[in-house]
Length: 118
Image (cartoon, rainbow, N blue to C red):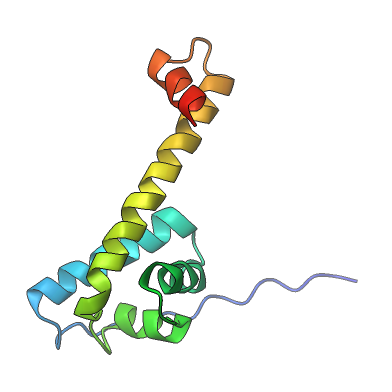
C-alpha cells in the first residue's frame, strides 16, 4: 500500500483592514504565542490552554477568526493571554535549562541551579 502525499494546508484568507492598530498588535502577539508555545498546529492547543486560563470556553474557531481578522481578540482575553504567555515562557526556560544541563559539555551554573529549585 502506498501512502498518498499529505494534503497541502489551506491558506487562511486574512483581512485585518477592520482592526485597529492595537488589535493588529494583539493579533500578531497571539500568533507568535501560538506558534512558539504550541507548534505548527497551534490553534486548538492555544484555545484549550486559554479556556483554562480564562475560565471560559474558547474554541479553535474563535482563534481562527482572530487570526483571519474576521474578529478582534476580545479585550477581556488580553490579561489571560498575557498570563498564559508568561507561564509558557517560564516552562520553556525550565525545559531549556534541563536540556543544557543534560547536553552541554559544561552546563551553566544557573541552569543547574534552576533544575535543583524545580
